[in-house]
Length: 51
Image (tube, rainbow, N blue to C red; front, side, top):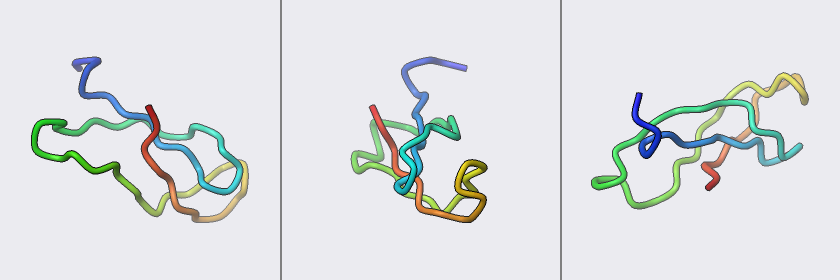
C-alpha cells in the first residue's frame, strides 16, 4: 500500500488516532469525515481526517 495515499482518522471527542485508511487525493480534495466506533470513548463518534 502506497504511503502517499494513507490518511489517519482521528476521533473528534477524545482526539486519538484510531483508524488508518486511504483515498485518492487527486479526485477527493476535501477532508473525510466518517461515523466510526472509538474504543477509548466506547461509542460511535465522528472521525475526521488528519495530516
